Length: 406
Image (cartoon, rainbow, N blue to C red; front, top):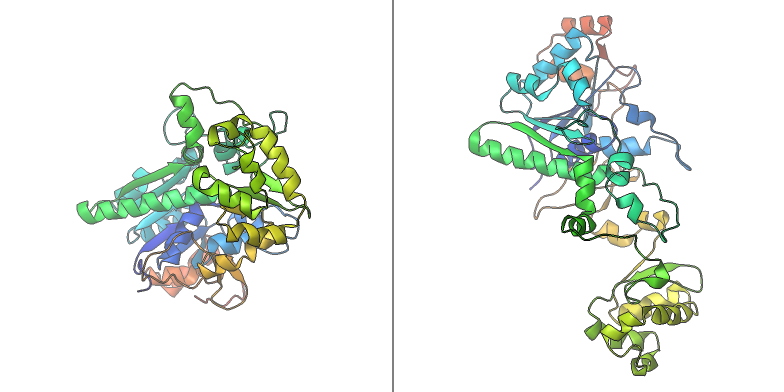
């Protein structure tokens, strides 16, 4: 089975990552996604800040694949009329514009649901849609990462400066949450015949990501900073550096079963006879000593030597991979986490889940600004004369000389 959302029309009237990425997931399963962006430069995400090695619109290709670009000026009455006309036959509308902007542009939920009560209005905000901060702007770095305690807790020591998040680190999980909310709302529509608002926020997703420590605090427990690596409570749930400088993270949580085979794998069975490490409780009491011993052991061999030895013993561990290694990971290719573009030129990261016997749409290249403007309006019933007039008014934009390909 393919195209599980075939016939589902989605209007992506969002910017940057979180909102558009939710539409991307819908497109992966066959939804028709119309990307609404301003004429000219288009979505500001197209001009995302340069990073080392970034020479093209890599990030745009990731979050805008499979979409049709409709470039219209929503500040113009006739541009808004185009959007309202499309809303009449749409199933899902997605936006992350600040709430005051939505009101000003007349694309708030109350505006669009009055046109189409079956519409599912997918909404992402930084801090939620109630309270005094509802109108505040924010990015995943500020609302998801910094605000929720994640940035404060991910440090090697209490003296270490907080670290910045990676691009999209909170946006992509938040996009998945919005996708879930939208699909839940579509299921409700099947039962009731009515759409409605499906919303989430960067703040709420960051709190969910930091849920374990936040839950501790909600029960009244003070949560201090995590101890440095040498003082981690369990030496068997720690990261270690090999002779070649490479790191790996070990997670032996079933110590009663795994500790003997682990010691055998690293040729350190003698440690089982050491009274400091004979049982799990005493290993916890002497975690610093055990960590120091394991530091010396793992520093004697390269990662390439340790890896098969630990795997053969069934030790649970993960190599601290570079981005290059993550992108080239053969397991990622095998499970469909990294897939080729439909044109066979290059690869992209797929959405993070699969359905049995459902094949995702082969990812098409992201559109240029206004690539499908004329087609979308023609399919909506606009005549060639009306389209020409809208172009002349500057309401409708398109990329000059670009073939209007799917």
